[in-house]
Amino acid sequence: MTKKRTYIELCIGLTICLIIYVLFRPNNILINQVLHNSVLQNFQITNLINKYIPNWFIYSFPGALWLHEFLRLFNVFIPQKSLKERLLISFFPLSFPIGLELMQAIHLTDGTFDWTDLTFYILAWLIFAVRIWFSKTELEVTKSSVIKLALISLIFISAVILTDVF
Image: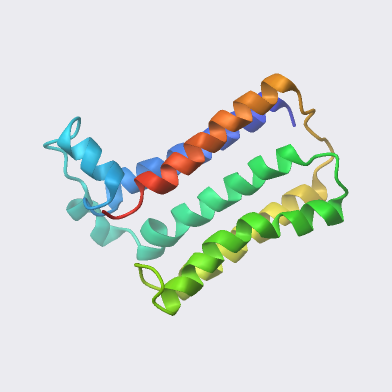
């Protein structure tokens, strides 16, 4: 897989997550507060479409897609490792959303514990694991690719912050 294709796929995944958050999630998440107070003041699609879209698509799928893309990005930073090492290292990013769900279960943080979220996170990791298992090519890590990947990582981090409820 080429670098360009990898970057494009990562950006497509992030864009899909952003579209779901902006169009279907409640107005009290930060990204929607910012957009609705500036660009989309009179744009309200949430109530019209939400009744036709399953909750898992709105609330669980974006987090799983975000995790999958982050795992792919994380994998680019460690391409020289063996398959076994890459799979073991991939548990590190997986531990964050699962840890967050468990903290929600015991009320250490805001939010609602959801088995569907946990299932989607595990499915995202499994899809990632299958993809790297069958992957034949590795990306070469260069200074420019690290800069691009750092920028994409910044977008990932920003997305998490912007999708929090304030």
